[in-house]
Image 1 (cartoon, rainbow, N blue to C red):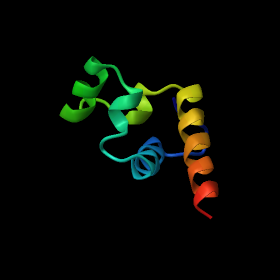
Image 2: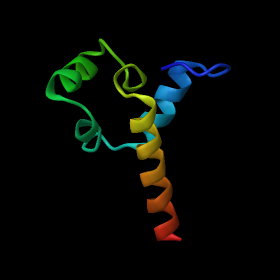
Image 3: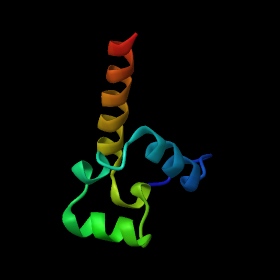
Length: 67
């Protein structure tokens, strides 16, 4: 998934910063997790738009609940 005007590596870095190492596998199949760990694919390669939106909404909700 690539959005116009955004560098996919920047998006991937931001997404990784939001998720702990323990959370990432929750969003990936075992095969995807293996590929991600090997460095073959990034989160942006493996997750689709709706999944990324759900992650962002969940994180925003968690932040709101801590304030």
